Length: 295
Image (cartoon, rainbow, N blue to C red):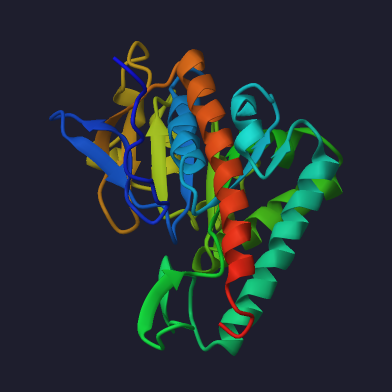
């Protein structure tokens, strides 16, 4: 059959396909300028959705990928195409989040000087050759920060001060990071107040509730009151992993069946993405050197 021809390049600014709805129609979510919280009992399919989103981000040349995984193996296959990977080490996690916070502050200072409000895909500028108005990629690439099992860092490892510092840093990134292109995707079994403070949970615009053991756990993910309106992830069959309720900011839940990538598929995509990102990075550096300093 010959070599497979590459398709159109993916962009983190485009809607991301994650699965199908109950009518078999594709479900897409827009991650840019948003954050996503994934919750549910063990085996509900949280890691499946997380890996689908990480796979998409890895294949986007216009974003950077940051991974935190207390178990190491859920996101470990993507570590070679990530800009940073942290395993079961609270000190490294705190250092990484602190660097992201500093980067976020620097970006806001730059946007303020440029009289802009957020990171975009392309901006207008003048061609250094013709003087015509052209569109060029923004100077800042979005960051996708994927965290598997938040509870490991916020409620298990380290001492109380470190866990509280992790929660505070993460809350700051979720609260202020959207406009400068920081996208946080966080998964946990039950985002209760002892694991994720309510003030942090409420900042996630997108929420996905895989099967939960009771209505209360479902409401913790989706928001208070949805179980009384007959929207409860407790009604999802335990024999239907990957099915869950997805809700967007200001919207209503919808039943979704997420896509599934097995280990072999993840490894193949990760290897391709690592090669692609290395090539694109080298090409970008050559292009930057070719642009006049005044441009």
